[in-house]
Amino acid sequence: MSLASLFLTLALVHLAALVAPGPDFALMLRSSLNQGRAQALQMALGLASAIMVHSLVVVFAFALLAKVLPGLLHWLPLVAGCWLLYLAAQCLKSARAPQGAIDTQSAPAGGAWLAGFATNILNPKAYLYFFTLVGGLLPPALPLAAKLGVVALFFSLALAWFGMLGWLLGAPWFRQKMLGWRRGMEGATALVFTAVGVLMLLRLA
Image (cartoon, rainbow, N blue to C red; front, side, top):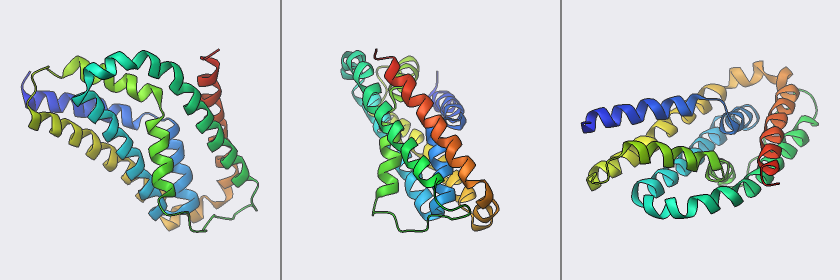
């Protein structure tokens, strides 16, 4: 497979994974509606930064990841499940705020970035996804420049996708239009986080 074909294949597969709804999408939607574009774009950068870390580890330390992955997949769901339950509690807290209110309070510096980064870096499926995708497609003797290109590809696609979501969903007119739905959306987001978090914790039993 030529490098061009390899990069095209990786791009298409990664885009398909990015657009699939999950906790990261729910988090972006909530941040965009509650805090607006600036915070949503910070969160997009955090989500993309975690994906960059995943890709760096898999591309440059594949053998090491192969050794630690079984243990990682055993314990990481515990941390990830607790994190998602914490996010669910935050959603429920926000849902109890007065109807039609938007949280315009300034978030702590880097708070949105950290929330996005933690959500993706703690996702066990992300490690398995990158391990399977990169391990199955990347040739062992790939040049250093090509490896760096793969990392840049994954990061840029993630930043473009989540950044686009933050920009569109955080538009003032869209936020005003969705004011009446805020409580319901917070509740639905809490339900998603709770369901995924509980499933992760149950797998440890």
